[in-house]
Length: 180
Image 1 (cartoon, rainbow, N blue to C red):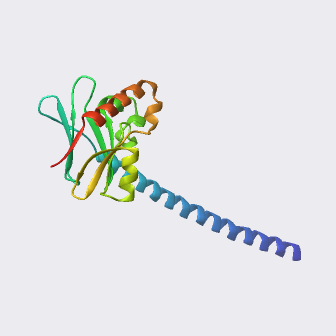
Image 2 (image 1 turned 180 degrees about the vertical axis):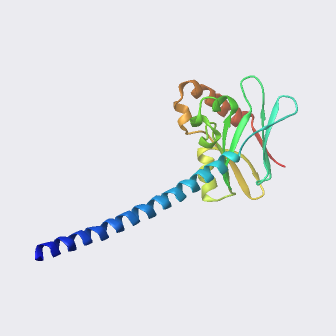
């Protein structure tokens, strides 16, 4: 009888451990499901904030960044395609073009395929560093607006690499930033 009592106690102990393990697994699964749903919603919101530039005038395009009160104008025509942009935060937008995005998600505006435009407080340490690494496109309302060239995975896409360099040269050389 003594050995059957020990066996019963061992089974009960294992039963408690099994119930606890199943409970932990259930809680983890529910938490992971909620976490995954949150990230999917966040990704959908980011995609919803990606947009194209507007065609304005003859052979020109413009990106209106209403939250910043500025607009970026670029030529549109042979050698350049319509600019795509993605709002990445309150002080950064990623850039690409319709032609670059044709090569896949690595070449999207969300991946800064044609660079990024960042807004930093005028004279701040971040603005000074950004200006050394990028090109100051303008200063308005206490902010410096710096164009940073791409350092994205799109540069590794053979067909897109030359096109990305061409777009960067257009944004750097011909792109003008002005206040609205």
